[in-house]
Image (cartoon, rainbow, N blue to C red; front, side):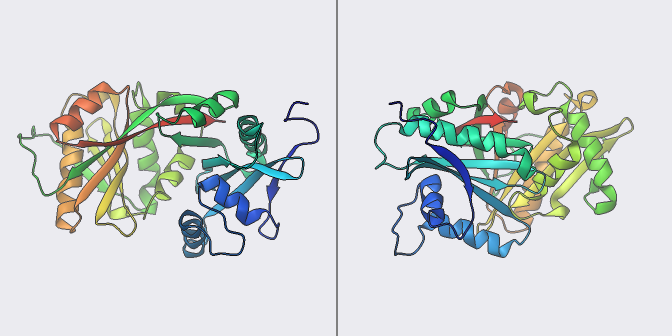
Length: 311
């Protein structure tokens, strides 16, 4: 009999379910010991939820008969996106890849009930097993993301062009301006262009706020006479002397005028003055103009991940 049959089922598990902790460990790749302490990844997830009351996650499992074969956890962002981690029980035997794909497909079907508009999985491009599972699922490969880092102690080795720019930092009263700047930067973008228009800009902005430690004084829109020219959103990385550029973009009318350089210069100078050591970011591997710019700024390759999405 096919190991994936009508007798098998997917379900959302509550914290009081006897399989809950085991499911979390399988999804996050931690070793599960039924009478021991949570593994480090599970412990970190549980601690983060306690520290951030507004954060949320939910667990989906797939059973083959009575056996918990696969599980996936969705970490929900404030804007309604969900970062997915999934895994299989190595003791399950036959049907593990199919069970994992079925579990992921159940997540997609349940997402709307949890007010999640976009699901994303990030996997190592060398992980052929996980990629094979995703190919069987309703997730689609978006792109490869290249993660870059830069030591902020090194100043740029070139002179910035002089631009007549006005800078505005974030406040609740400026949220509409930041949404306008984000929307302007999406026009003919080369960075994950497939995501453009999938969700309201207000939700995307809320997602950026929920990445790392929200740092409104490090969020800037730069203006020219034509309106928003560029936007950069920088948040602190928890427990590290580092920051992440969670988004950087330039409006179509301002491209080629040195706005990106001005944004990066402000980020690096501010980070250095604040005592941070590193700036990190992720870039779509297809965005060759941005990658050339980061090369000029001496960003270094840290790692690469495939991004798979479902809506």
